[in-house]
Amino acid sequence: MGIYLDHAATTYTDERVLEAMLPYFKDVFGNASSAHGYGQEAERGVGIARQQVADAIGAKRDEVYFTSGGTESDNWAIKGAAEAAKKGHIVTSAVEHHAVLDTCKYLETRGFDVTYLPADGSGLISADSVAGAIRDDTVLVSIMFANNEVGTLMPIREIGQIARARGVLFHTDAVQAIGHVPIDVDALGIDMLSLSAHKFYGPKGAGALYIRHGTGIAKFMHGGAQEKDMRASTLNTPGIVGLGAAIELAAAEREQNNAHEAVLAKRLRDGLLALPMTKLNGHETSRLPGNVNITFRGIEGEALMIHLDLEGIAVSTGSACTSGSTSPSYVLLAMGLSTVDARAAIRFTVGRGNTAQDIDTVIEKTKNVAERLREISPLFAQYKGDKKYV
Amino acid sequence: MYNDKVLEHFKNPHNVGEMENPDGYAEVGSSECGDTMKMYLRVDDNIITDIKYKTYGCCAAIASSSIATDMAKGRTIEEAEAMTKSDIIKELGGLPEKKIHCSLMAEDALKAAINDYKSRK
Ligand code: FES
Image 1 (cartoon, rainbow over the protein chains, first blue to last red):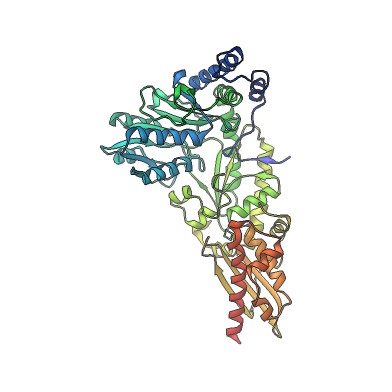
Image 2: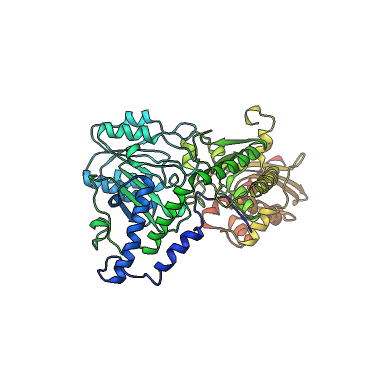
C-alpha cells in the first residue's frame, strides 16, 4: 500500500467513529426535527454530539451549530457577522484559507472595508498588527488558529484579548488546529470558531460553528427551524454523530497522537533538510506537530509531487483546494518567498497511521526523485556553487 | 489528472541533457508560470540530428519537452519549425486545460533554438 502524508488535506474516518455513525444510516434514520419516536431517537444522537463538541472547546451546548464543514462555518461566521453589522471594517490576514479570504473579498464588493494583515517570514500574524489595524468601525477580526500550509500557530490568546478589549467580535478558523491544540473558547476570548470533522478522523461533510451567546450574527440558511432557526436544513445525523465521536476521541488521545506525529515529523524534517538545497518553510517551533513544509530548490513542486505519487507517496503542493492551478502558494508568497522558491515547496503532513518505516521510505524516495528532477532542471546547475542556496 | 503517456514521458523523459557547441540554442520562459527551458540543437544538412534540453517545470512541461524533442529529431528545419503545441498535446494524448501553456513552452523553445540556428548561418 501507499504512504499517505497529506493529513492536512483530509484524514480517513476512524474505525470507532464509523461504528458510532453506522446505526444512524438505517436503524436510527429518523428526521431529528420530527416529534415522533424515530425523530426523537435521532435527536438524542445529535444532542450527545453537540455536548461532545461543546466539551471539546469549553463551550455551552447551545452555542454549537452544526454545518456542512469548515467552508460553510467560515462563510456563515463572516457573512453573518457582516450582515448583522450592516457596514464596517473587517480585519483578517493574507494567509487565511480561501474560505475566509474569498468571503472577505466578496464582502468588499458589498461595501465592507477589509484589512489583510501581512505575515512575517514564518507565517506568523502578530497580535500587534491586529491591534494596529482595528478601527472605530471594525466589526470583526477573523484570524486562523493554525495555517493549513505551513502549520504556523497564531497568537490566538493575545488576539482574543485585543479584540475583547476593543469590543470587536473575534472569529477563528480552527479547522487545522482543532485535533492538535487544546482549545478553550472562554480562556482564549474566541466569539466564533469554525471546525470540520474530516481533519481529525471524522467524516467529510460534517462541521460546526461555535457562536458565543449574545453574538450578533444573521441566520445563514433559510427554510426549516433547525439549529435554533439559524441554519435550516435537515440535520445530517450520521455525520453529526461522527463529528461528536471524532472530536471526543481527538481530545482524549491528543497528547499521544501529537507525540507520535512530532517524533515522525522531526525524523522527516531532519532527513529532508539533510538533502542539498532544501529549506524549511514556516515557524521553527510554533507549528502543528505533523506539518513539514520544505522547499526543494531548483525543482518544481508539482513535478516532485506527481513523481512521489507514482511511487505511492501522497503529499501536496499548496493546499488541496488550489493544486491543479499553476500559481504558486499565496501563503508562501505572503511569507516573502520568491516565486521560484514558493513553487518548489512540498507539504508533508504526518498522521496517526504513519510509522518510522514510512518516514524512512519517504526520505529515501524523495532523495532519489529530487536528484532525478535536478538532473533535468536548468536551475540546479545555476544554483550549484552559489553559497546562498546551500 | 495526467494520462499514462504523459506520466511515462515524465517519469523517463527522453533527450535530457546539454550539448557542447550546439548549432542552435535558446532559453525560454513561460510568461504564465515563470518556468524555464533550455534547448540545444545539432543540425546537419538542414536536418535536426540531435536535440537536448533542460526543463524547470511541472510534469506537463517535462513530458512536453520529452515528446517534442522526440518529434523534432530527424526532421528538417522546416518541418520542426511548423510544429505547434497542438501537435505536442495530440502526441501526448491530451493535457489538462490548465497545463496547455506548459506545452507552449516546448514549442517556443524549439522555435527559438531554430531561429538561433538560422541566425548563425
Ligand atoms: S506550470 Fe509551468 S510549465 Fe507547467
